[in-house]
Image (cartoon, rainbow, N blue to C red; front, side, top):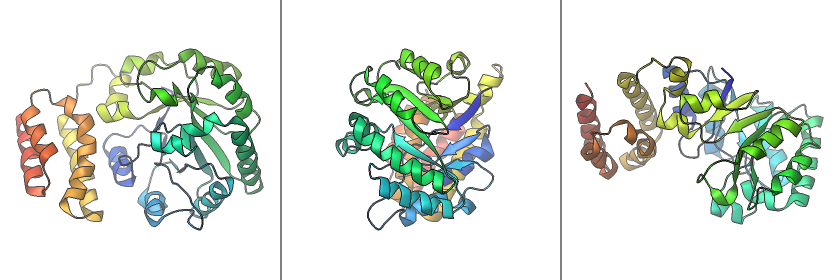
Length: 310
């Protein structure tokens, strides 16, 4: 199997989730942290720092991610990350959020190729001076697939350690089919190793992916945490006991660092947005989970769901 990376998903794949997933399922070669957004005089917030602290991420390979269009801010965040022991940072040019793109960040930065080129020149100059590596996670453009050819030429000017390509446009969000011809263009012409990301939900999707270096999965592993095991062995049945073990570890971890009840439960609801499809006969109990605001109500619905699956 190709190298497997876990995509960063804001509000979901923090260190509590990562460590629980790695212990319960494993199989991930690199985890990418949800993006940090450096600003003037604040390269990393306390929350962002806590998420990537090495002691909070034992036994896994983690790559911190930075979202900005300001080269000075990127370099200052990279310095802080390097002081924590990280030698690779990932630049987010893939976030399609409207509020992010409106600020010219994430995939919105792709609309300004000349500014992007100057930005890359500055951050890669800094990285080379300080012995750091930069990978890039990107969309193929903002509005038109034809933007990709010019963007790829810009990327090829810099020593990108890995180019992670989600072959959709920013305006497409996660809808429609990826533009695989644009990904093939990257495979054929990129000077950096190319990683595929996007719409990998089944074992066949993974097996048929044309990427040769690595693939990055995100939503596919949330919908089915056992996707990798079922790709390696098609006879593997879904293990609900393992899912409950995973659930309980994440839930307990959140309760240790968050308060009040509603804050923890809202984080768990983010996961249930994906896990709900695993319980076709549990619609009533899932509604109770989504409506819950207190631990007692949430726990009752979850425990009933557990009993239903035995």
